[in-house]
Image 1 (tube, one colour):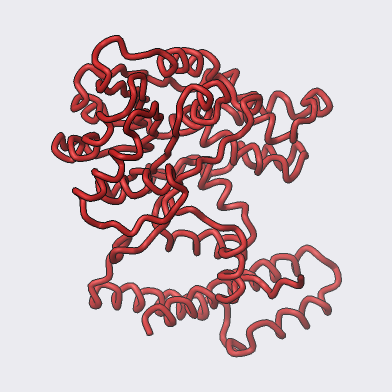
Image 2 (cartoon, helix red, strand yellow; image 1 turned 180 degrees about the vertical axis):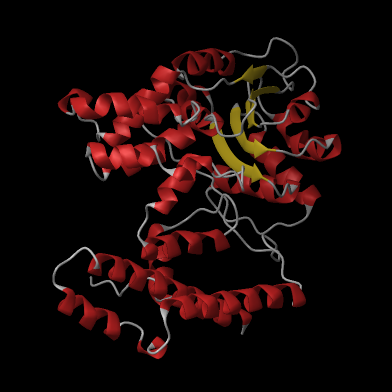
Length: 387
């Protein structure tokens, strides 16, 4: 009931915003008789109530819904033990489409392709660390994981997204499923360790543990126990933003990943903004494009979506509007990159709903495009799709 009430309130708010846009257009056209007809045809349930009264009524409804949330004890970001599929085969862009990581990749590849000179069961862990969690650690790990020379060097490879909710059982199951290409129904830690030990015994493996945040040594010890049975030269790449995670690995080599240079960030933004075309074909946009790229703070995660947004309209006026938008100044949620907020702001309302719908899935969920589209259709967010 609460969700239905919230949904209806949000839909009415969206309708009201659309009508406000319509009335704004009414003042910009000479064909007033046409717009009068449209405005009186929208949302007939509100006829007779002026705009101010409708806005006040809507605010009261939303405040009531917010109070009900507190009464019901609902909290943001909290859910049960959701059964979720973790990403086991990382998507990676072609190496030619990445910028500023050639030196990092070469250094780490040399480390990966070298045999451990100590004992055959010793573990080498390459740990990407940076001051910010969004500088491209996962992308760099993907480049290494999918490199042809690396694939030829190792007998088996496996990838597991670890993320916020560390669960050694889930991580080991993910590694097993990646190695065997079969679903794993084992839930006992000891049996899982034995099974993974059998899979890696006498083989040179490469495991990637992406976005590891847990710095509990006992948990790490449980996870790494089967790794010691691999062939000499086996490697584990751990991506993390926490130095404390690296400390529990003692003498593990640590690679500190820096931000992109201003030039590389600009090139990345231009590649997506101009869709691989030569930027010189749009001389009026080159200079303002450089200014916009500086708002990305040299973060690849910020540059790519912002470039896609810019590609939608290659007009100086549009780019200038984005550069000078007040959205850059919003600081109420520092966990959201300004460029991502900007990209979301420019989405059509129906796409905002589709995007928001994806938040119900766990972090690192392995989305299947066709399944998500069908769910959008079922929820009424988009119309039926004709085959």
